[in-house]
Amino acid sequence: MPEFQKNYTVRRVEHFEANIVRLSLDASDIAAVARPGQFVMVACGTGQDPLLRRPFSIHSRYPDGGIQLLLRVVGRGTAMLAETAVGQQISLVGPLGKGFGIPPDGEVCLVGGGIGCAPLFFLAQWLVEQGVFPLVLLGAGSAGEHAALVPGLRDLGCAVHVSTDDGSLGHHGFVTDLLPALSGKVQKVYACGPVPMMAAVARFCGDRIACEVSLETHMACGLGACLGCAIPIPGRTDAYRHVCKHGPVFQATEVVWP
Amino acid sequence: MIVHATNSTPDLHVQIGTLKLDNPVMTASGTFGYGAEFAGLLDLSRLGAIIVKGISLKPRAGNPPPRIVETACGMLNAIGLENVGLERFLVEKMPYLRQCGTRVIVNILGDTVAEYAQLAGRLAGVAGVDALEVNISCPNVDKGGVAFGAVPEMAAAVVRAVKEHAGQPVIVKLSPNVTDVALMARAVEDAGADAVSLINTLIGMAIDIHARRPKLANRTGGLSGPAVKPVALRMVWQVAQAVRIPVIGIGGIATAEDALEFVLAGASAVQVGTANFYNPRAAEEIIDGISAYLGQYQEPSLAAIVGTLRHD
Ligand SMILES: Cc1cc2nc3c(=O)[nH]c(=O)nc-3n(C[C@H](O)[C@H](O)[C@H](O)COP(=O)(O)OP(=O)(O)OC[C@H]3O[C@@H](n4cnc5c(N)ncnc54)[C@H](O)[C@@H]3O)c2cc1C
Ligand SMILES: Cc1cc2nc3c(=O)[nH]c(=O)nc-3n(C[C@H](O)[C@H](O)[C@H](O)COP(=O)(O)O)c2cc1C
Ligand code: FES
Image (tube, rainbow over all chains, first blue to last red; front, side, top):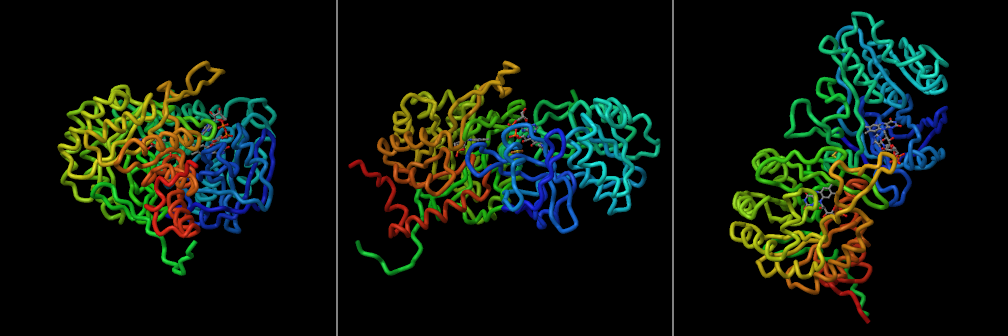
């Protein structure tokens, strides 16, 4: 799988509620080879502070051949990226990691919470290309946060159900409250979001429904070299897995849930 | 000054004991995996050498997460020397490394003098292993580096044992967490080291003030990156004056300018560490930058400028 370390030009910057920003980049080479669930390491600024690149999932592949990132400002690096202007260059390394697995014959469901929804759009694009129209369940703090994803997903032809913490749109409560209403025909769930949300999805799926989750850890390299992104392996104390290399997408059964 | 009318490229080669490197830029242990991790992003055959992640006799799981935290112009790591162990290294990693077209240096670590000796003995006949780097300094594992790297007699004992069993040149990697690094360097030189490399990481700490907890599960970790460069440079300069064997400079090197500072201070070669993480092409850029510098000052070779720091 080819990897690139290059500067890409920012074509478009969109600001949404709740400090969410979407960057469109002219990374057609990355778009051509990337799989949903893979990520890029993004340099924030050009100096030595912050020193390390930040990992971001590929949010979408768009028609003129670039990629999009959807990020939430949570600290210094993301704040710097949010201030990027159109025409500016950003250095990316990627695509990295193992993406989502192929869909089974039968119905599939995507479950996303908060900014964790970011990779689900690319996943939905890829599934639709294969003729699979997933049911998408999305949770967020409030209505405005859904603006970045819901219209695009409906345009793709996906059925979308939303929840909000404040009740301003859709179900008032957790997105996982929507799981029991799933059709018995769902063969696989792809989930991504806060750990408690993914843990609830994993519990719901149990060993009845295949479930893949995308995990986040702090990362220094994203390449499998620093071994900083270790996570425990169920039932083992003699080894760890590395999120950047073995993941970020894992089978829910491969993860130690809190 | 005579301006040479030739445009021949400067001679970058470095001699370390019986080991000849095509150029002085190596990738530091623990920051470049086993080489393959970077193959998609730079031409491995251009590197002076790849130094692999520290290898122990038995596999090690390493420390629980979180293992890394970013700090101002640097990072702390408490990986805990996670590695695949000698046998898996030989079977799974060496075949790839052998065909990379570059020199391969195996970084070794042990809990006892006997373990170091065993590692050196097992690696002695292995094709494609061009040198050993002995980690006597890693600050992360209770039973690991600190004990050996902090006491001259213990460091010397490890070096003597490794030299007795090794089939390749032996580089000894020094810890900066000592009072007198030159004393340590002389101790390992007297014990037979073919070269010294320094610095390993500086022990540090970071605290989450909201949780009132250390940010690393291991509580302390090793500081690396541009933040440590001035300390590393000072130590390399001191050691270069104290020993006759080659000195390899490590610590915060991210550009050719950084590398050249170490060379002028007395380093015959350098290692690039943390910079690989945020600029996977760093080592290649540094090789090109050193060439350009030598050309700019009409120096025929890298060797011609090692330790030429002026004090007037
Ligand atoms: C594979 C992967 C994919 C990701 N995809 C996205 C995405 O599509 N969109 C998005 O907005 N974010 C994503 N993240 C999280 C993103 O990397 C972090 O939000 C970002 O690194 C924070 O940088 P900062 O400098 O703004 O924050 P900092 O100032 O470094 O930290 C601010 C806060 O964020 C937390 N944080 C920092 N780094 C991470 C991290 N790597 N993972 C989780 N929490 C972190 C810190 O603990 C702290 O509480 C992803 C992370 C991973 C590992
Ligand atoms: C994540 C990480 C892992 C490391 N692992 C090892 C190791 O296994 N053995 C070793 O001798 N040094 C190890 N080091 C130390 C580096 O090789 C180097 O000496 C140090 O980081 C200083 O150089 P730098 O500032 O260029 O990174 C490690 C450093 C980092 C950041
Ligand atoms: S982030 Fe460096 S090994 Fe995963």
